[in-house]
Each structure stands twice: as C-alpha cells, then as structure tokens.
Image 1 (cartoon, rainbow, N blue to C red):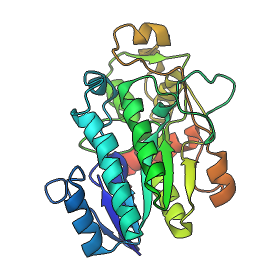
Image 2 (image 1 turned 90 degrees about the horizontal axis):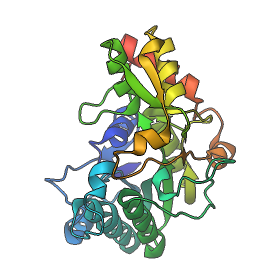
Image 3 (image 1 turned 135 degrees about the vertical axis):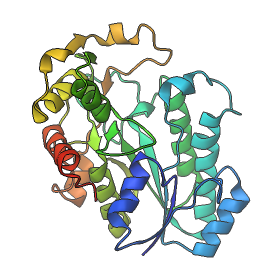
Length: 296
C-alpha cells in the first residue's frame, strides 16, 4: 500500500514512518520538496505518486506562539493549519484519494468536567491554535473527500530531536535534580506516539471514515503524570511541586484547558482494544524505550 505523508518529520509522523515503513510504501517529502501551501505542487506530487492514502501530519503546534498570531490569516499558524489542510483535502477529493487528517483536543472548550470529549461533541476552541485546527477540520469536511479525522492529545515519545514533549521534559528535569511544577486540576489523556502510529495503521487497513479520538484509555493530571514518570525511573518525587491551573495560566497568553481529555471508546470498540494503552502502561513502555534503546 502506498502512503503519502505530509509533515512526516514531526513528532507523530516520524514515528509512524519509523514503525511502518517496512510493510508500507511511504513517501514523505519535506517542505523544500513540496509545500502544501501551494495547491498545484501538492496536486503534482499526489498525482505522480498515486498514493492509496494521504496522511496530513503537517501542523503548526506551538500553542503560545500561535496566540501571538491571533486573527492573522497570513500567519504561519493559520496558513499551515487551515490553508494547508484545505489544499490537501481538495486535492484528495479531485484525485479520489483517501485522506487522514490529524487534529487535536484543542478544538474543544475545555469545560466538559463529567466525562471526556466524544467525537459527537461540538467543538468550541478557546485559543488561536485550536481555532485554526478546527477550521482545518471544517475544510476537510467541506471538501467532500473520503476522509478520517484523527484527534490526538499530548503525544509523547521516547525520542524526537526536533520537539520536546511533556514526558521527556519531566524526565529530563527530574534526572537533572531540577524542581518542576505540575498542574493538579487539569484532566488530560496523553498518548504514546507508538499508539497513534499503530492506530493509524489500523485505520489505513480498514479505511474507516469519520472522526476518531486516539488517546490513552485512561486519564490523568500533569501532576500525576509527572509522578508516574518519577516512579517508573526511580527519581525523586519530592521535586514535583503541585500548582493549580489558574496559577499556571496567570502568565500564559493562550490559556491551558482545564478538561483537555478525549474519549477513545469509539476507536477501541471498532478497531480493537489491544492498540491503545492506559497512561500507566504507556509510561512503562516509554521507560523501556528510553532505558534499552528500543526505539526501533
């Protein structure tokens, strides 16, 4: 099966390629080769490669930097997350290629306290990053292409040089004996990138259309998550200091969402319960990869 991946050098895309390039014919042009902001060159590469599936990993993901661009449709956040998604979706419609678009929990408002967000819940983004990702989703839906929309939350990896995630940040700080402050009253569903990569493989095989939430099968708080990492690596948990979300948000231009959790039940019920893991299981897998260089 031929897969064309845009944004394949990112945290999630690079791991998907690393895990599945042996049994899938994956092509992942960099931005120098193909810029998805140019529709004609996007169309050229899709037509020449003739993939069975296009995956759009490309995204502007710096939430705080994105807020500095709020309202600017010429900014890189809007251009990549909206125009890029629009171009890829329209080309997939024209060529008749199945598209998987990666999105985020930040399309929601973070106010749902009683249960994690399901696929049918109405998005209501509260910052510019979330707004542009939601508009990107809308472009995919309106394009008329055959698509699957995959929302993920707080992906973390044992290794990725270009971007630090929450797990490796906590681990690095604790290993160096540095104190960290972690939020106690935010509900999150961080997901190991391997789980996302393997979930995408299942979606590709079945070409399951619609929207799926691909996250850990349990929820946690950043404070609990930091403690799980400290316990797994036998590090000093007293270095982890509690902080409330309100305290953390005081100096943030883009406010962190209080209930930034997603429900993966639709995915697990339709595609299997052995692909996604709990937060604790994910941390243990993360530890094995870090300790034994099993990131292959």
